[in-house]
Image 1 (cartoon, each protein chain N blue to C red):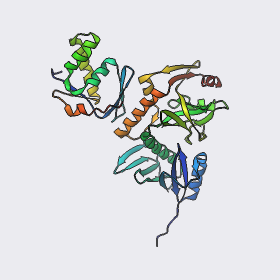
Image 2: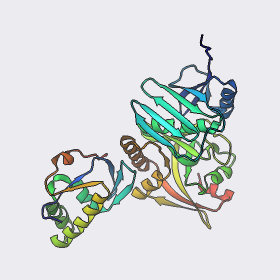
Image 3: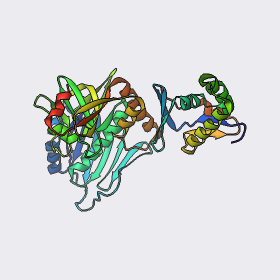
Image 4: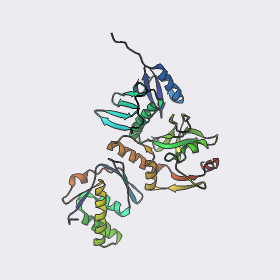
Length: 268
Length: 106
């Protein structure tokens, strides 16, 4: 007789997309509940189901690059600390990882990049916040000031993330959605959504100033910060097209700033 | 470069006009290229069946008031560069199949 271990699960909903995560280890499920507390759905309905199998600690390696490939009708995602398969057709997937919750975070980021690409959206290396009902994005490479802008945000700004912004197209406009994906701030964003007022490409300097960036420079600056893992030509084209459409609809500006609260006086 | 040079856009790219420029992205390695106004004209005329010298004569020399010889020399350098990056195809015979597969988003 085979012993059957029943898995329990939670539904994590980011960007309005519910994903059920199941695991036979209740302690790990509890970790997931804590980690994604502001993004749990009480609904039983989920667009996708992932079964998580935990590997023994010490079997992982963080040195490997992420690899994402489409093979035989499913996405294969792997890095030193996880291996995941996902079949969009039957809406099911499997994740093998250690109990490190950041491995699951990485898988969720990849899944959302793939899903967003089809919907005209993308994940962006950017902090973001809502102020006066409009979302502002602050993008740049590591060290550019994403977390600094989040830390300096005034009390009336609702922080969506200090690390990975979720950009989704809603009819003829782009919206930013809060995510649980955080950086140095070590705090998930608020689960809110608002139309994007502007994208700022960050640069530190001796004074606060804003300069417009147009056309190809804006697309180039945006694409440099878009998260995309799949080296699939069709998906590359989708992301490129979304980036071009985005800069036609949303102002892109260079924000040079002194790292103190005065920079937020320009963000209105 | 040979007298009859045919140029066609690769299908493994995504491209989009932005203002007077054309942005082209290689779908295989995600490399980005920005084509200026004149390069964009050649790019858009690269249908695989029109010889390069005819493209230059009809699309460049007349529009920009430039002599054929220097314009063609510049155009040849441009298409060779783009071909080296895999985003343009060159041939001494027509490339009708490549020309009909635009791979261009708008």
